[in-house]
Length: 260
Image (cartoon, rainbow, N blue to C red; front, side):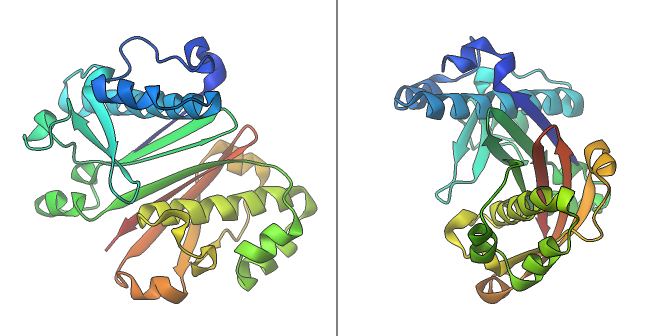
């Protein structure tokens, strides 16, 4: 099961001021916020936490029947930067007493935050007996990017020849959207791999053809295909990826789920 949520900072005056709304953060998170001295860093971090925790709270209420206060949902990060969630900081207890068995991804851009979670234990495509094991090896990556003009050198530096040909063949009205979508797709895949931009972006190929109409892309999620090249073909070669994308306002959202 995949759940997602997009929030705008403009809807929350406290977040605009870089202030945590009451009841949002646990003790260690409050300490972490205090280390951010730049307003934009505080805004992005708080908006990401606000979006992720509200998504998690809704997911837990609907799937377990338990209402967990936001300040009891602690979002931490693995050494590579991927987020994970605990209840009150515990990782040893079962169920809601410890580490939550979901894959989480958070992204933000231009005052918007996009968060997605994947719960393998509720994935009806996986046999019930295999869901607990699947939860430990499936990962989601989410990315949001503002649609804007990018220099040609951006495309030639970060895209593969196949992707360059794809954008060159796109209708002019969709050129900037497709460039943004390909970049966002790469970020989502690399997040699902728990690698981020530490890897050459040309090691990931994102194929968005055939392109949907703008109306279709705004209305619902569309599939895109993922191929790995170069060094990534040697990393967990059995891994498979499912990718989706859509447009909301002037933003592209992408999701990638890694499975094997």
